[in-house]
Image: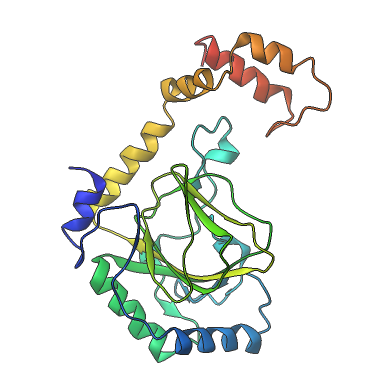
Length: 263
C-alpha cells in the first residue's frame, strides 16, 4: 500500500495529490488579524515563530525550530546535508503560545479531524523576497499551509512543478516527497504551517521512502544520469573559481569514490 492510500484511510476528504487544497472553510480575516497582532505585540519581527512547543519550553523564536528542521537532502553526499537536527518529535508539541487565540486552537482541531493526523508543531514562517530553501524531503507525514500574506510569485516547487498557494486557502503538502519553497516576488511571504504526526504504519512507510533515496546505488545513478563521471570531474578540477556545495577536497573525492564503486 502506498503512502497516499494510507492517508486516505484516515482523512475525511479524498487525497489524490501530494499538494492539494483542503475543503475546509476558514475565517481568514480573523486569523490573520490575530496572528499579525501576536507578531507585533511580541516584537518577533520576521523570525519563524513557534505557536506550540514541548512542555517547559518558552523559546518561541528559537532557531532550532526553523522551517527546514528535520529535513533530508536527497542524494546528499555529506552527513551535514543529510541529517539536520530535529529538536523534538511532533507529538511532544502540546503547549500553546500564551497569545494563541481560541480561534486558532479550534481551527487546529478542525484540521486534525479533516486530515486524520495529529498536529504537533505550529509555526508562523516568513519567506523573504528573493529567498528560498534547498530541495529536500521532510520526516513528518504532512504539512498544512495557510497563506496569510503572499504574492503570485511565491511558489512551492514539487517534483518539477510550480504551485502558488493562494491567500486565505488551506493546503496539504505531503512532505516525504521532494520539494522546496521560493519567493520570487518583491514582498515577503507569510504562511501559517502545521506539522503532523501519524501512526506506526505511516511512520514506517516514510522511513522506507527516505532511506531509499539515500542508497549508494541511487546516489550513483543520480550522478551518472546528470553527466557526472570521471571525465567531467577531471575537467571541473581544471576550471577556476568553480563553486560547489562543499569546497573541501574530501567532497570531490567522495564523488569519485562513488563513481568507481568504492563507496
